[in-house]
Amino acid sequence: MLQTPGAMACALLFRLLLLMALAAPSQGNGPGPTSRLRYSRFLDPSNVIFLRWDFDLEAEIITFELQVRTAGWVGLGVTNRYTNVGSDLVVGGVLPDGNIYFSDQHLVDEDTLAEDGSQDAELQGLTEDAVYTTMRFSRPFRSCDPHDQDITFLIPEDDTTYACTFLPLPIVSKKHHIYKFEPKLVHHNETMVHHILVYACGNASTLPTGISDCYGADPAFSLCSQVIMGWAVGGTSYQFPDDVGISLGTPLDPQWIRLEIHYSNFHNLPGVYDSSGIRMYYTATLRKYDMGVLQLGFFTFPIHFIPPGAESFMSYGLCKTEKFEEMNGAPVPDIQVFGYLLHTHLAGRALQAVQYRNGTQFRTICKDDSYDFNLQETRDLPHLVEIKPGDELLVECHYQTLDRDSLTFGGPSTVNEMCLVFLFYYPRNNISSCMGYPDIIYVAHEMGEEASDPMEGMMAMNNVEWTPENIKKAEKACKEAQQMVIIKTIDEIVENTTGWISEIIPTPRGPCLESSGGKVAPQDKIPAGFRAAPMALSGSETATPRHLPLAALFFGQGALSWLLATLQVGV
Image (cartoon, rainbow, N blue to C red; front, top):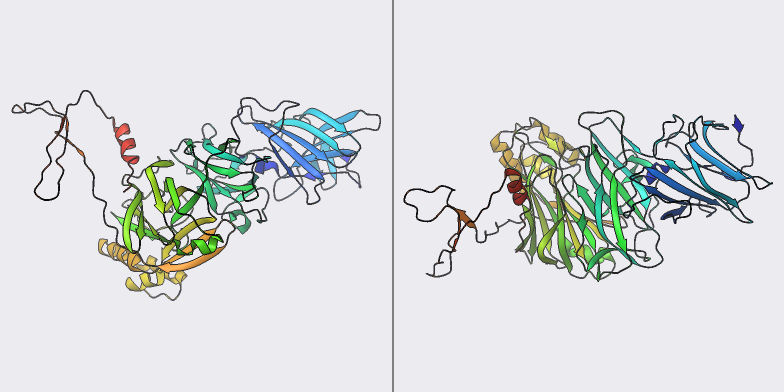
């Protein structure tokens, strides 16, 4: 046993679990003994203890360099968030005769260290000068030593887990732009990772350490609300347009992010470890515009409900932009939207975002009438959509719950529901989200139930007999109820306003291709194929059909599903 001295230079227990989901640029090989480590931070308010680190996801090796303003020995450790006992430490120092010592150890109790039977940390360098002691070493994410803490995340056996951690963005000496992101999913865990979101944190935020439930007992883990990138089931990498990027490295840019990973462990599998995350690519070659993301939709909790046994049920979330300039603290330029991400859970069948100007429907921003939970991806708009201050934005979500016999509530679980649209736009402002929900007390009264507060209103929905007539009645009441609109900035400033849902006028369909059915009847002179459908023109004019011969065109069921899922509407 090695007893820790009473006056130690530095005995540091650092919760390194937070490092593993860090988004990183592409890297072929892990950092060598002299290579530059890309990430760094001070670990104490006095700036005495400085840590650099880097990792190789393919080899599952992480490298640390600990620099402490001290002489003597230093230590770096991994602990869980509940106790220091059992912590995994690496200890090293320079002896008075110039020899060095280095050891992989663990904490037996609050005062006693013991050397591990298996030495899994590899020393790459240990020096001491008149000011600093610097120790550099590498170790695997997971070793076979029971005294080593895994630097990965153990997926709980619960159906749904929202795991959050706070991570520093790369430190750069001048402005850069993030221009691309892609998911990095651990092999065999793809079915468990439902979505990954990255939120920018205001620089004034006081952030916790470690990994915890995003929306659990500690509200600090739900800080930071401006989504800057996101991936969901079925999505792939996404590269921003050539003139747009996420700004990095200026005083106005975030220095930290919140990484949120939603795990769906429906089979309650034990012992599944994960180090999935998002990889960001950034460059010193600047783009013309700094981009932002605006989150729209139905404020998820606690008002959202969907009746069981519904062939169709619509939910609405309203956004009013009239307060954007006041909350932004500066004039808000017209928002130029270039892409979007749609998100519901398993009951979602269709979504659309509609824009209103001066009380009149102006355009459909984006729409998917064949929404597929397993194909959620960031999509480009066919052309830029401009949103002006004062415009209203309405999100409509279409659900089907024929396979359910109880109410579905809004919430984080995959069996709960969401109704969200993320708009990717430029130039960036400080507004992070703008979402609405209906007056649930009004809805309860319309359903013949007593309610004096929102909680009673939600509870009252359990008393309703959900016949087809009552389902339609509830949908109508939710649409006619006054909407509470909640607007939030990146610095967590919240303002409320109210509004009303406007009618959505269906977007007229453009020219289509009409199929003859793929069969040739005896009287047919032309081979089966596609031909342009007649277009109705003003007055007495008629369109002349155009015949397009079909050379060889076959759509498999999967290709057709993909085509339907990627249809975009922009007027």
